[in-house]
Length: 325
Image 1 (cartoon, rainbow, N blue to C red):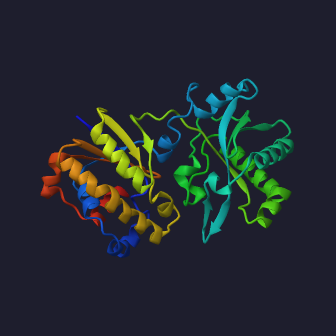
Image 2 (cartoon, rainbow, N blue to C red):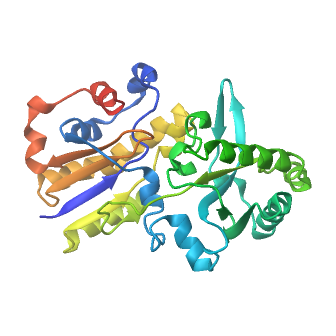
């Protein structure tokens, strides 16, 4: 049976109170038909499970795997992933930006890492992995750490997602010291003069290997790619394909309702109508619409026969209310 996993991380607008207005801007009969007639199940995963799904987890945790790869695993007892970031105040919230927005180059990353390493003088150490992804070595006890990669919490109040565990106070203290150090870093003044975001903080996290079947995962986000991939699905012998379509994700996370409405309407025009056709003609027998959330995530499963089960029909608003509980 040919199946499609369709990962749509941007499909849910996070503020349910806004839907009465937003629904008047949406024209999504096929997308609504697919989603509202599906069987709903909560599942345990985050968008970062797909973003970092292909990374090296040979040592169990991502940070420990990198430490082993760099041959620094014996220098410290614990390791964390580190992303440089920009924090900004928004009324009573402190919002975090994904590292890619900083447009850091290698020279800038090395300047920041060297400044932090000098400041802590061996208490901890940063290692460069990529321009916007680093590794932290520390001797703090982090076995019980709960943390979130930035990609899962962009647009959210970070006070709710700070690393949590027995060493949380020490980690928060380290974050505060780094923020003060970066505030006075000449590089940040230079970046501001050049119209670039200042790097005013870092973010700590770690991950276990995702326990998901994401066979044939492909990240697509453009109209031509959608058409091409759907054509290939019906022409290949693969029994399971996973498409990750992040259209609308950042618009939803940053509460840009105009951009979000445009993206969701685009999904209707360029994806949903074709999926309904493929499903009704049994070119695809099962679609799993996977919707990652900050806290709760969902799998909406739909078979060809479900399209005709009118008694399952819910309104889009009813579905959105269900998905936010």
